Image (cartoon, rainbow over all chains, first blue to last red; front, side):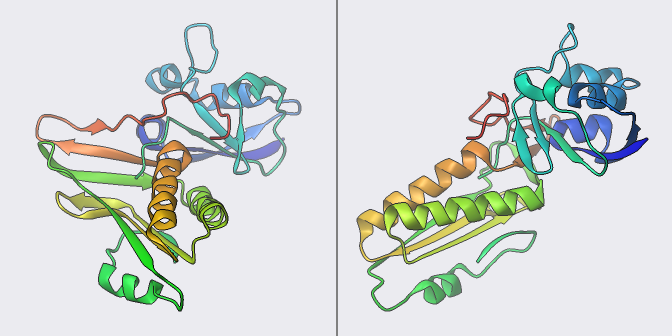
Length: 93
Length: 140
């Protein structure tokens, strides 16, 4: 098993908590990882995924501080020690 | 200085510190908590990434507009109406570069730096919607 850190920000943090360490198996993709973390939290899950289980178009993903296009997320296999961030559109300034 | 912090800063001192030999113009942008019928504003950042993004924007602005100095202070935490949220101080040889550099920096901060604002309102709290709503994860 591998350990991966998942962090949520802003509205997603309020729904799902600031961060969680998750144990995942081999060949776990980014969508699999986020679904595993959100599966027991309907409101949090529905904020991130649509009814077909796809990322909502406003969701932003980062893996080890690098942005991942949600269209490419399923091609990303997580690795031990990864730091994944999930957040809504930014509104600084 | 490029930083994300809770504390306010002395803008007058920052302007003085930004002056260098050859400086002909300093433009200060000060983003302030506006009284939109709110009690306070709460700001949150993905700090490691946001700081790096601010540094990247400052470096790009310096190069593109021939700026002598760029300081960016973005505050987080709870801020009351009238408090400073974001201070950008840009020093250049001439006003044109200073104004354009300042504008470039604020627009890029709005576009892609992971910072969020929540309005704490009398009739319920509300996350401020970003101006750039697509979240396809593509770099700004």
